[in-house]
Structure formats: C-alpha cells, structure tokens
Length: 377
Image (cartoon, rainbow, N blue to C red; front, side, top):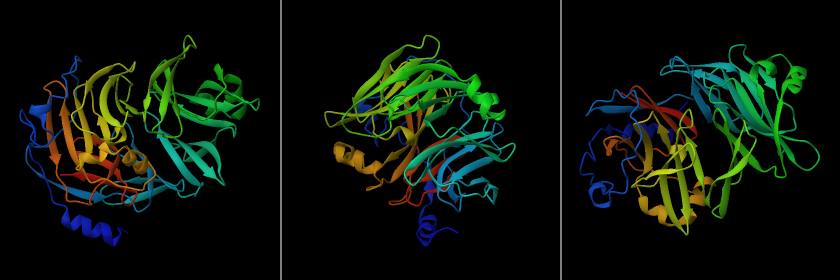
C-alpha cells in the first residue's frame, strides 16, 4: 500500500509540461551562461513520445522498498529487486513475485543487458556476498564467497569480478555466464585471470568490451582516483582523478556523466568512454539522476535548489541520506544544444534516483520512500 505521505503527494502533484529553454532558457540561465557546449558527437536515435504540452501522472509501481529495477529486451516486462532480495515483475496495474525468498540486506544490484540476469550484493551480519538471479529459470546462482566486487559486460554474456585470494590482495577475473550456469567447478576452471591488485576496497564497472573501471567503494570528498584496466593488454592506467568523483555511463560506455567537487566547487560534465571531457553542463545534479538515451539526448532529474551544491557538505550528506532534494525533470538535446523542462513538480515530491526513460515514461526510485515509480501520460 502507498503511504499516507505519498497519497498526499499524488494528490498535490499535477505535473505540467513547459518549454523552459529553447533558445532562451530562463530557468537555468542558458543564454547568459552558455556553460553547455555543443559536443562534437554524431546524432543517435532516442525514443521520446512526449508531446509539447501534456499532463503527466505519477504512479507507484512497487509495494516494497526498491534497490534496483530493469526491463527485459522487449521493454514490456519490468522487474525490480527489493531491499531484502525479493524479485518482482510489475506493470501499471499489478505486481507478481518472481522470487519471494528474502536473501538478506541488499547493498546493490546490476542487471544484464537482456534483463534475464541480476547480479546482487548482499550483506549479512556485516559480511558481503554476491549472487546472480536467473529470471528464465527462476533460481539463485551462488557465486564464490571470496568475491568482493562484480559487474556484467555490456552485452551481458560475461562477468568481471574481484576475488580475495587470501594472500592479502585481490585477483581480477573474467568469465562467461554460460560457464557459471554449468556449475561451480566449470566456472572456476574456465575463469581468466587479468591481474592482481594490492587493494580490495574497490567496486568495478565493466563499461565497454575491453575496459573495466576500478572505483573506490566509499564516496569521499577527498581526492579520488579511478583506474582503467584494458582486458586485452592487461594494462592498468589512471582513468580520472578528483574530489568527490561520481560517474555513470551509457549502455555501451561511449558517453558518460561525471560529477566532481574540486576545491569546494561542484562540476557536472559530459565525457567520452576514455574520460575526456566533451562539455560542461550549466546545472548540477548527480550522475545517477541522469539517463543517456542515445547519442543526442540526455534526461535528468535536477534539484530545484541549485545553491545547495555550493555547500560541499550537501554532497556528503546526500549519500548518507541526511538530506533530500526536490527534483524537476529535463531533457537535453545535445545536437541542438537545447534544454527543455519536461516536468515541474511541487516541493517535497520527488527525489529521483536511478532514472530511465522509455517511450513516454520516466522510471525511477523515489528516495523519499524508496519505492519504484513511473511518470507517464
């Protein structure tokens, strides 16, 4: 059931589409600042069926607290992972439990490209473990307990993982999901070692066919270094460095969004797959509040009060869930160098996380109640 708070929120939120910045851009000072430069990238396709004026409706799609969600390749079936490890299929009218087994406290979840597998990190009594749920066979596949971080390849056919070798350092491996489905023995026998590291406190992200990033697990406003590993040459190089670094990438890793807070000054930039800056945005938000929908369009949930980013303490407090934002939704046209405000909401309504956009629908997790929502016609 939706909470009383959210029922009130649904009543007061009538979201009105308004063109906010086509050439003028009063809301973000577009004409004055010109902070977003036209990137020299090729146009791509994006499915956007939102008309110029419409009323959008906010709809709760989950009864559970949600950590991650994903759609299958048809985009017709949407699934979500609850905070205790249950798997549900949901639509605008109902939800169905695919796995009702509570597996433990979920720290994070990542889905494969085809939406048939979800990689989950659990924490039980302070000890982390990684498992994979197979939606086709509706069963959990257990990964070795020594794995400390893992990520799917962009095509979903492989997995990269860091494994504690019990000698004081970690080994980075890659493996085929097909081997894993054959059993633990086949999985161990067929794994490919890339290199060893004298550091364990890393998350990993496989952003394209040959590149895996090592990212500090702990967000910090201090200097952060992100490292890139070439899976073919097995070379490791510095990818990016800076204070308070947060990154997100498009599906195939060709474009990314970078947030930093160097010298107490926030910055949001568009980068390519090699970390090279293509443009600076004229507003601030966090990368997980944006969705790169091709080579020409980006959708973002942007906090109304942009001045909070001038207080770097806000960034740290945000990820500790000590503060929340109140977001509007915008669309960036990279080729035309235009910005449109797609939806304007009331205060204390939406603090969107993990947003995506398909057809005429925004999907996101609302940090106010940790539930999964759609914003659609």
